[in-house]
Amino acid sequence: MFSMDNFSSWLVQELEERGLSQSDLSRMSGLSRGTVNNIVSGTRGRGPESLSAIARALKLPPEKLYRVAGLLPSAVKVDEEMEQILHEIAKLNKADQREVLAYIRMKRNLREKEK
Image 1 (cartoon, rainbow, N blue to C red):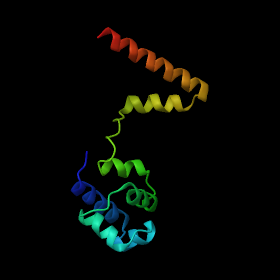
Image 2: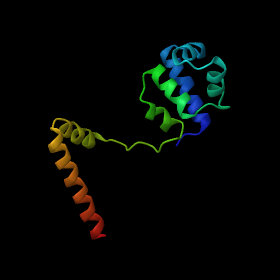
Image 3: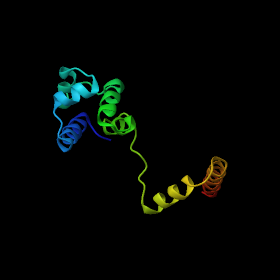
Image 4: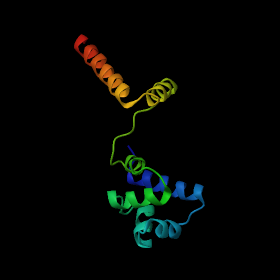
Protein backbone atom coordinates (compact mmCIF):
# COMPACT_ATOMS: atom_id res chain seq x y z
CA MET A 1 0.00 0.00 0.00
CA PHE A 2 1.08 3.52 -0.73
CA SER A 3 0.87 6.43 1.66
CA MET A 4 -0.32 9.88 0.71
CA ASP A 5 3.30 10.94 0.21
CA ASN A 6 3.81 8.01 -2.15
CA PHE A 7 0.66 8.91 -4.06
CA SER A 8 1.81 12.51 -4.38
CA SER A 9 5.23 11.35 -5.57
CA TRP A 10 3.61 8.94 -8.03
CA LEU A 11 1.38 11.71 -9.40
CA VAL A 12 4.27 14.16 -9.79
CA GLN A 13 6.26 11.50 -11.65
CA GLU A 14 3.26 10.66 -13.85
CA LEU A 15 2.79 14.33 -14.75
CA GLU A 16 6.50 14.73 -15.51
CA GLU A 17 6.55 11.64 -17.74
CA ARG A 18 3.57 13.02 -19.66
CA GLY A 19 4.97 16.54 -19.87
CA LEU A 20 1.99 17.93 -17.98
CA SER A 21 1.83 20.70 -15.41
CA GLN A 22 -0.51 20.96 -12.44
CA SER A 23 -2.47 23.55 -14.44
CA ASP A 24 -2.81 21.04 -17.28
CA LEU A 25 -4.11 18.42 -14.86
CA SER A 26 -6.52 20.93 -13.37
CA ARG A 27 -7.91 21.80 -16.79
CA MET A 28 -8.08 18.18 -17.98
CA SER A 29 -9.66 16.82 -14.79
CA GLY A 30 -12.05 19.65 -14.01
CA LEU A 31 -10.53 19.99 -10.53
CA SER A 32 -9.57 23.40 -9.25
CA ARG A 33 -5.91 24.38 -9.29
CA GLY A 34 -6.00 24.53 -5.50
CA THR A 35 -7.32 20.98 -5.25
CA VAL A 36 -4.65 19.70 -7.65
CA ASN A 37 -1.98 21.56 -5.69
CA ASN A 38 -3.24 20.07 -2.41
CA ILE A 39 -3.17 16.58 -3.92
CA VAL A 40 0.35 17.06 -5.28
CA SER A 41 1.59 18.54 -2.00
CA GLY A 42 -0.05 15.68 -0.08
CA THR A 43 -2.20 17.88 2.13
CA ARG A 44 -5.59 16.54 0.98
CA GLY A 45 -7.79 15.57 -1.90
CA ARG A 46 -7.36 11.88 -2.50
CA GLY A 47 -11.03 10.99 -2.24
CA PRO A 48 -12.72 8.81 -4.84
CA GLU A 49 -14.16 11.77 -6.76
CA SER A 50 -10.80 13.52 -7.13
CA LEU A 51 -9.03 10.27 -7.97
CA SER A 52 -11.66 9.41 -10.59
CA ALA A 53 -11.30 12.85 -12.17
CA ILE A 54 -7.52 12.46 -12.33
CA ALA A 55 -7.88 8.94 -13.74
CA ARG A 56 -10.16 10.23 -16.52
CA ALA A 57 -7.73 13.06 -17.28
CA LEU A 58 -4.75 10.68 -17.46
CA LYS A 59 -6.79 8.00 -19.26
CA LEU A 60 -6.05 5.43 -16.57
CA PRO A 61 -8.40 2.99 -14.85
CA PRO A 62 -9.67 4.57 -11.61
CA GLU A 63 -8.74 1.40 -9.75
CA LYS A 64 -5.08 2.03 -10.50
CA LEU A 65 -5.21 5.40 -8.75
CA TYR A 66 -7.26 3.95 -5.87
CA ARG A 67 -4.55 1.31 -5.39
CA VAL A 68 -1.71 3.84 -5.54
CA ALA A 69 -3.59 6.04 -3.05
CA GLY A 70 -4.10 3.09 -0.71
CA LEU A 71 -7.88 2.96 -1.06
CA LEU A 72 -7.82 -0.53 -2.60
CA PRO A 73 -5.59 -3.49 -1.82
CA SER A 74 -2.73 -4.21 -4.18
CA ALA A 75 -3.65 -6.08 -7.31
CA VAL A 76 -2.65 -9.69 -7.73
CA LYS A 77 0.81 -9.99 -9.23
CA VAL A 78 0.64 -11.58 -12.66
CA ASP A 79 3.68 -13.55 -13.74
CA GLU A 80 4.34 -14.96 -17.22
CA GLU A 81 2.42 -18.17 -16.57
CA MET A 82 -0.61 -16.25 -15.30
CA GLU A 83 -0.43 -14.02 -18.38
CA GLN A 84 -0.62 -17.12 -20.56
CA ILE A 85 -3.55 -18.52 -18.58
CA LEU A 86 -5.44 -15.22 -18.83
CA HIS A 87 -4.67 -14.98 -22.54
CA GLU A 88 -6.06 -18.47 -23.20
CA ILE A 89 -9.15 -17.95 -21.05
CA ALA A 90 -9.90 -14.68 -22.85
CA LYS A 91 -10.15 -16.64 -26.12
CA LEU A 92 -12.98 -18.79 -24.76
CA ASN A 93 -16.67 -17.96 -25.05
CA LYS A 94 -18.49 -16.83 -21.88
CA ALA A 95 -19.97 -20.26 -21.14
CA ASP A 96 -16.55 -21.89 -21.31
CA GLN A 97 -15.05 -19.12 -19.18
CA ARG A 98 -17.69 -19.78 -16.51
CA GLU A 99 -16.89 -23.50 -16.68
CA VAL A 100 -13.16 -22.85 -16.23
CA LEU A 101 -13.92 -20.54 -13.29
CA ALA A 102 -16.11 -23.21 -11.69
CA TYR A 103 -13.28 -25.73 -12.11
CA ILE A 104 -10.74 -23.37 -10.53
CA ARG A 105 -13.02 -22.76 -7.55
CA MET A 106 -13.66 -26.50 -7.15
CA LYS A 107 -9.92 -27.20 -7.30
CA ARG A 108 -9.17 -24.50 -4.70
CA ASN A 109 -11.91 -25.82 -2.39
CA LEU A 110 -10.47 -29.34 -2.62
CA ARG A 111 -6.98 -28.05 -1.75
CA GLU A 112 -8.34 -26.13 1.23
CA LYS A 113 -10.11 -29.26 2.52
CA GLU A 114 -6.85 -31.22 2.25
CA LYS A 115 -5.14 -28.85 4.69
